[in-house]
Image (tube, rainbow, N blue to C red; front, side, top):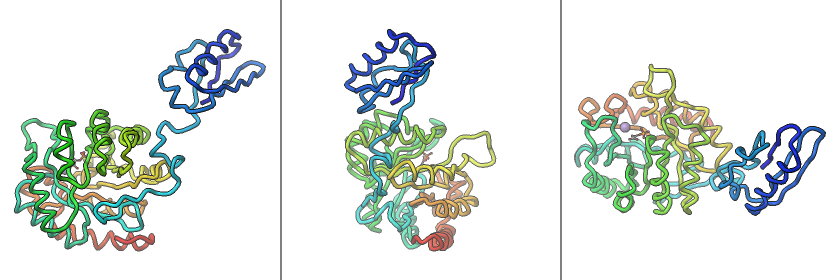
Length: 337
Ligand code: PEP
Ligand code: MN
């Protein structure tokens, strides 16, 4: 940490800042220039977390040297993390595709969908049981009944399953059923939930918040990792911008930026990014081309009658042709799918 003091700061001001840093257990290095004094705090910067250095008299600027996220950073771990979800390797050369309906509606809908996405090459089945709906009058999901149906679909197809956890009180039951816990965009900064899912030690797919910066996204991942759970997949799913032509704006540049900043695998969900089924394919192609480790795609056997997100859901046949197209893009950059 580098602390720049204001011009012509008195010795008293310097001593006060130095004392604060030392009291947190760090060493100091003082560099006195003609007009300014710069103090280097040497040691574990996290120990300074309790002190508001910016608020000390005479402090002009505080510049951290290390990233605020540690465990998830590339500085901490140079090699890319590869997660093993029931034999499905995530973050490796093979691009993995999570597919399935927005929400679990019935056994028939889910099992039919699961079989079809598997046949097309998806490796993980998605399905919401607890749904984060904007309106309290919309379908809220089948809850535990939905989790049970997901387990049945897993039995029939062998596909690992992912479903969203919205409430810390449901952590145990959701973890009992799923292979990957999804933390949705609206809960990316629900720190209590992140802590619980960190303690649960289950693989987690963390979606980027609607208006979260990449730094905030990584800080949320750090919450999970700080509990000893580093089985985290990051998922870019579009952010809020002034643009209204699509449901959200897909931030494709988040992928190479995240790849630089973190060792965690990065997925893209083009379905929630665009909100329209006919735009899912071009963005899925772009996602693979830009270096995503995987995709999350909503597929429904009967989108017209879907209880949630029908407009962005692909019919199984359309999903199968998307897989074909995306496979070609993957091959062109030396990956498989
Ligand atoms: C979902 O994947 O079902 C979902 C609600 O996504 P998001 O949290 O990205 O809106
Ligand atoms: Mn959805």
